[in-house]
Image 1 (tube, helix red, strand yellow):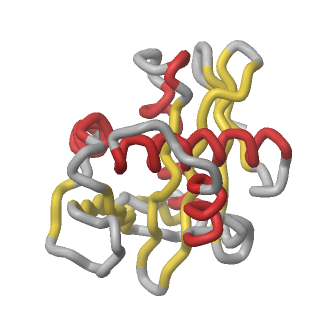
Image 2 (cartoon, rainbow, N blue to C red):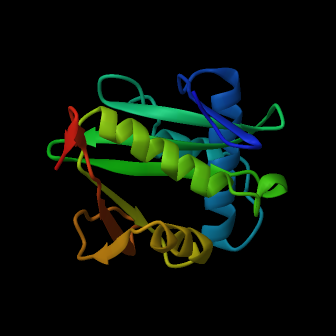
Length: 170
């Protein structure tokens, strides 16, 4: 478990009730912002089925839940790919934003990635997610050419990680 002054972050299974609730809120926000309107019946469920989170478990990935002052407040996922890992599902509940949760989640994901031997993290995001793009840039993620053709991908980022090897580092 990773802990900062007000955030505690730990791995969780995507089927854990807190994870399900946070992932649902993540998808609700993604659908609302994409369409620019409230979600219609079934849209969140459809989005969750279209892009499932079940692989965010060992050995294919990881899901982290963030708690702030004891309440579930955010999540982030890591999907292991051949030669790199994908950062996904970065979400902080609106009532907890502006308090370092995004930074804490990204730091925890990167820490876990390093322990898994990952030396490069990539992600894709949409143009309307301005705050997310700014967060990634602040944490050293640089825009790169498209590495996938995801239906909602409009910006692609990558960060090289320094991986510690024994008492010396690369």
